[in-house]
Image (cartoon, rainbow, N blue to C red; front, side, top):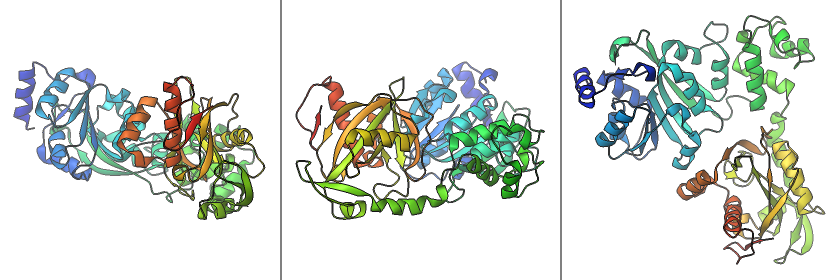
Length: 464
């Protein structure tokens, strides 16, 4: 929108820029079109705009793809946007409080917005937190914040936010915008930044929760030496500094992201360097081969069982928190079946001579790092193609996390509400491992029937 059009539209709506909402309307159409171009949006791709205002960016994004969602806090502007862009979905709500988990059902989404300065950091962390459904992100921020995100070590701009975002996202400062392209003009310059997910091999994996804790602790008193800040976490400080190739007097802002990851892995090893090899080693595990009645016939290696689609046994666990949300894991790229698919909270094969229940206890400890106080059986699933020819016992339990996720097994994970999972499955069933979908049907059937026995599902599932 041109400046004159912005002024006339606000007059027609009987409103003016609200300072408490951080409203500064972009009126330079060339700049608006350029910002949307950086999103690299193609026809049909899902996108989300935060705080669209009067639609300066929206008009160009909608021209590229009509699969858009707008989140606008100002009720009068939300109504205006609904009338101006009837082909788009408009949510009247606060982007800083938006539940990002809702976007998984849309698929990998691209996000853009001219963010209010007072909530920029909060929204940025919210939309980049793990797990994230975001595939690309273009934000206009206060220049100072934009420079912090793209900063290099040993600079005054480099800080905890740089590192916490930069571990999983590539950040590029695209350009600076003068105050004059906005109405009203802010008192400071703005910066446009591009964030894109890092490639899996950009950095080694590490314990994400521990990484965040250590970085925040290290920067809590920026000018102090790290050996004082992390004294309780590091036993051999000299050995660590030798590993990182830094002086013992090093401070938080002097470590690169890679060095912070190495520090974290020294304190909380993940064994990540050997994960591909471990993924190969598990092929030698021995399973019981069973017949169509789940009677043991013989024993064979995991590799032999999978290559020949022989019937065997497995467990799946559903872990719920106090709100009733279910924890889902995203399978590691090293998994021999269904890599990078979303799956049950924990799952695993029953090794020869083991029972279903002791395997369930082992899996929740190995995959999530917690012990299950109570395992409640949900039901059984007969071996079929969807389960990978596994006879499955499904259990449920409760835990709050945070969990320690082994990189060989799990890429990431998060809690989701049942309605969110239902919408996600309906929209994008291929995002999930087939075995989980069968388990989910069994769980939902049991919930509807209040635990009563019922006819078998398509995959032969029944309740206990």
